[in-house]
Image (cartoon, rainbow, N blue to C red; front, side, top):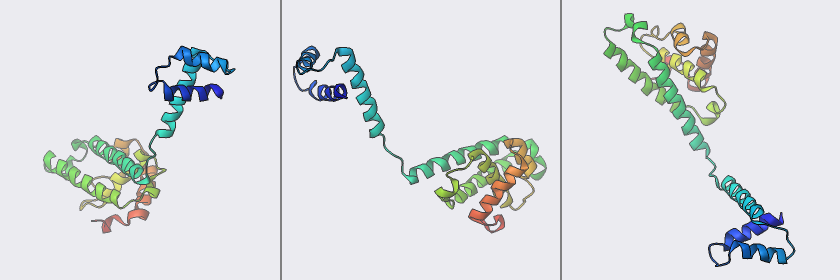
Length: 181
């Protein structure tokens, strides 16, 4: 403990005085402390690590919520891109129409995420939640049969039960998909 104190003292005075480390150690020895350069150096490292630990900025709930929602948005986009045009070809005239629908779904997902509070998403499996979100947003479309559970199940690797559970969680938070616009 004394060595830590001496390290703090040395760190405070080393840049402001012309005292060399050897002189500081000699003065500490004269005061009755057993210390050498290596011990002082190790103590200084411990002090710096402790300072770094305590000087870290804590994140606010708002920052955490924003980070989680950004992760979900990225996962939503990735999972949506996993659903290939060939899988939904019968519902679209061309690939561009499908791309436009995906953009529309991303906007709706963003709107849905804005309605969800931090306490609702803080302890979630984001990937499973995203699968449920794709299904939920798919149910808000005019043609609800495009993004079926089995299609999302293939692209996301989550079971239809998991997708349905997350869908029901979203229904509780946001409301019925038919009412979402």
